[in-house]
Length: 548
Image (cartoon, rainbow, N blue to C red; front, side):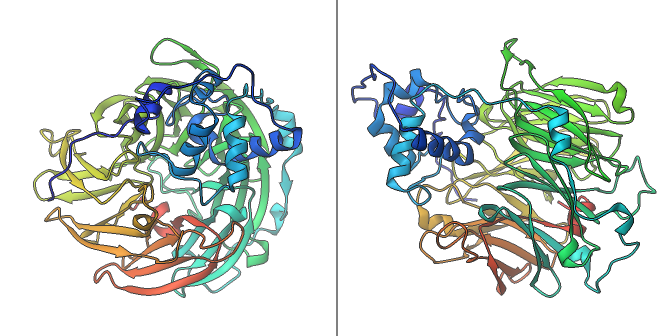
């Protein structure tokens, strides 16, 4: 295991920290006396750019979370030139560069926009959601068995971020089956999973539900012919991230960034049934108006969802056995909650409170906080990874947005109580990353470094051995200028690893690809082309069976 540089990178948590990150501490700052101006057309364009690329970390109201506050008292102090430099070049604290995403004119517009007072976004009523609900295939036309001869349980459901669509890819044949329009920038796709509380649930893994950044929720039926796989849609927010399905398959829940609420939807016809506000008092005793819903997961041992309240620093465990009389446990944890995953027993939910540099562990059986694990800068596990370590037993791991490091902790309080919820070891990688992935039958763990400040390094992923804890191979997935390698996923039997390559050209061009590797030899096997910014990939068998 390589020795790690213990210097911790700074967060973007206000003007002082932002200046420190950029090395500007010795330079004078000048406040703008008057609010900067934009034409109405440029204001609307900048507002859309901010929503698409910035609001996820900094908030619609720009109060900050994973990223720092971008309220006018902060941004005007930094000034136009410095803001343009930050947006163009990114920072070592986890913000990526946008000089290959925005034009110079757009960078200038966004820098001006964030110095103005944030516009007040609208609310959304249940009736408005119902008016946006569409049935593309009638319920009576759903088939009783697959209408094609493909192995649908080895399908990959692939997000094509900038195309506003999802691709269905045949994992056996390495070919695209369908492109399904879903709305802007799908963030997460979920299906019904095996649930101990509902052992007789049928058709597990058949229906998939997407959640886009525009709050649009889409229902996909993998048994249909490709042209009919999109069966229904609704919209539950203007800005959203996550979705989950109840273990009995009756309900879907979508979480809003704005408006800050979650919505329970009928899984059959996508009709919105109930809205619950997520505004409230955070773990510091402060009222939070923009309390966004981050990760949502079905709990495999109970009829409930875990719903992460990002700014509140709370996990709400929502019992869906009676949605007219919701039972909600509000579990205090830490800010700011983001992505999470379950341990192999499906009992313990582990989620990053990344701006607090912690992994949170919740016991979904007792519905209480189990542990807070201190990590380094900005943990980001994505779908996470679990494996067996020769010394610590069952462990789980995360990369970090703030530095090149994988943190590994014990996750077996029953069999290895002395190692449980403690850092087992840390492994230095070449750069900050977003995702980590493994498979029970593989001897390797894969980690990307998508957030590295040097674009060339973003093209590599690294593979380390579970036994030796050593990096065994650094793989250059692409050598195309500006391309980025991200997100790994194993196929159904664990013999292949699929890695996404983000677009190698203008947004909207279908010139991204997925690179397929042999999980044992680590050699390239195939390239699946014709995809637009492929990001998350979800293997049907692995996801419905909780294979991590």
